[in-house]
Image (tube, rainbow, N blue to C red; front, side, top):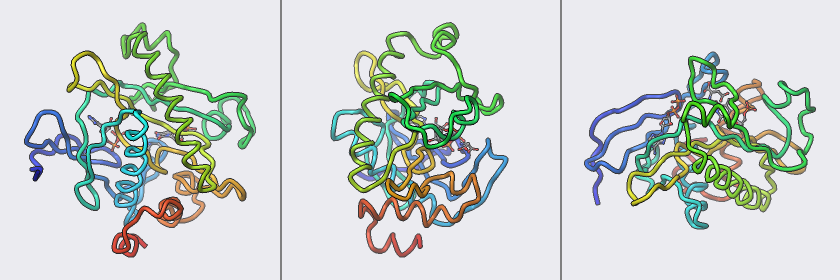
Length: 250
Ligand code: ADP
Ligand code: TMP
Ligand code: ASP
């Protein structure tokens, strides 16, 4: 079925959303812009959008196949995918296996220390407030999600972590931590939560299991080299880029 790109609905830091001819889907376009620290650091990195389109397709499709529901329907072209439209819960759900990033900074835990068990954290999605860390009690009080939804979000987050840890360790990558966004699906009767947005090296910390080399957006955040080289390496470990795409991004 041909999908018509209708109206630009939203342009964010990394993606653009377009309406389609129907009410339940959206076109998600991946841009080449890389931003960090709430867009204080910004750069155009040729090929990044293509890499994240393919990588997010791969991770979301794998999750769909083990019945962790995601918004992904199908990839349309190099930079765009068709996704299920949902009502985004205004939380960034972070799961951590190893201390790094803001956890290390906030609590003084040495980067690289394995946590006794996966840690789930919630950040309120609001750029003007710098996405602050919030408690479960705040989430209930301000009705960002119900208690039932929160239980389901924990379950989705931990299942996603288990599955992705296994998938990545098979190619010698360690999933240090990741962020997901979750939305309420309009399609099914009764409430259903699905993973939305993207899963890519922009939203995960991935280290080579042996050398601990970073293969994620920290390379950009910390000025450690080229993210297109790092992201291509992740894609290559799964051999997921068609030949013509690989030569176009590198
Ligand atoms: P930001 O908004 O932080 O700048 P992006 O550039 O990645 O981030 O923008 C993508 C936006 O699309 C995000 O706000 C995200 O919550 C929203 N989004 C992602 N998937 C869906 C979906 N399936 N339905 C509705 N909104 C979505
Ligand atoms: P943090 O250590 O900076 O809090 O990041 C935790 C994880 O969340 C890490 O994998 C990167 C990801 N993340 C995003 O996807 N978007 C963001 O805006 C931030 C701050 C982190
Ligand atoms: N997503 C945020 C930004 O784009 C922060 C980050 O990823 O470091 O600025």
